Image 1 (cartoon, rainbow, N blue to C red):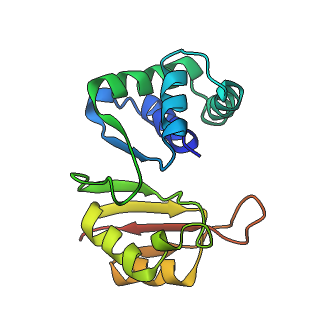
Image 2: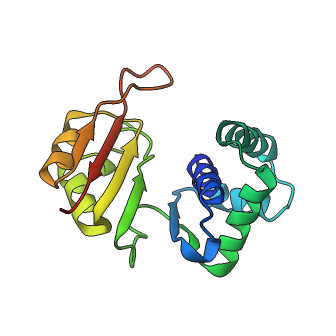
Length: 176
């Protein structure tokens, strides 16, 4: 759920000296409870999922060799500035999201959310939301996903899977 990608993104931003005011981060979460819980935790309020969030943060800090407090601070400041927006369901709540340069597509599975994994929806997502220069990654590696990426100008990069999966998907589109 919500939190993994945000913490990793904030960690990378800290490492690369990207100020919260210089980035735009959009998070989509179907379950309002998860959004409220993660945001409350970022703001220092005790929540039910605090142990899970703290464990993920600790791993991000170790893996990226970044100060965990700086990661949380980056997200808190981004939220306060409005450069990180917590939104509802994707793509329903994606109005105004244009020119995305990095898309971390973590939309359950084709079995759980088939409406987010059809070739047509994926093509529309890549055309409507993604910049001509864009990095895309997801844990999934379906045929419809690969076809949609290729059809919209992305180049696939072979990548092993994780958590028991054979492969995952990494793709890049660069406007020459």
